[in-house]
Image (cartoon, rainbow, N blue to C red; front, side, top):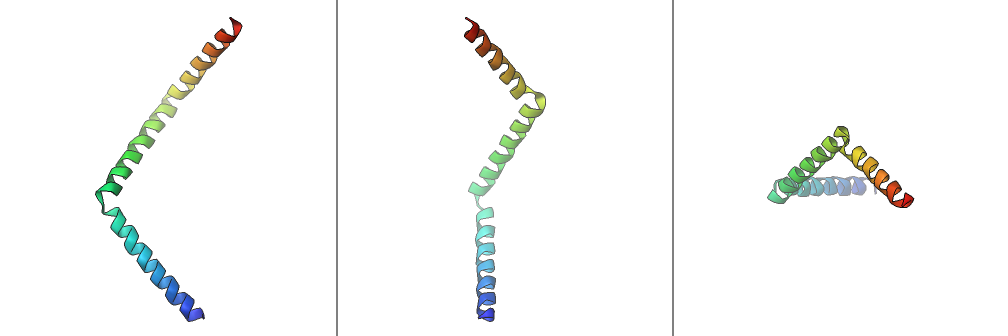
Length: 69
């Protein structure tokens, strides 16, 4: 039983490694990875630059002005 589990685990690891390597060399994976990197970069610049905080402050002021009217 122990040997059979080891053989099964080895075969599963080999097949999943082969499938992952095959997926990584496709153009779809490269395009998705590039898009994700650009999105993370844009989000980082937005958060560090304070654009999100300023937008939230402006929205809060607009909402409080609307409530007071």
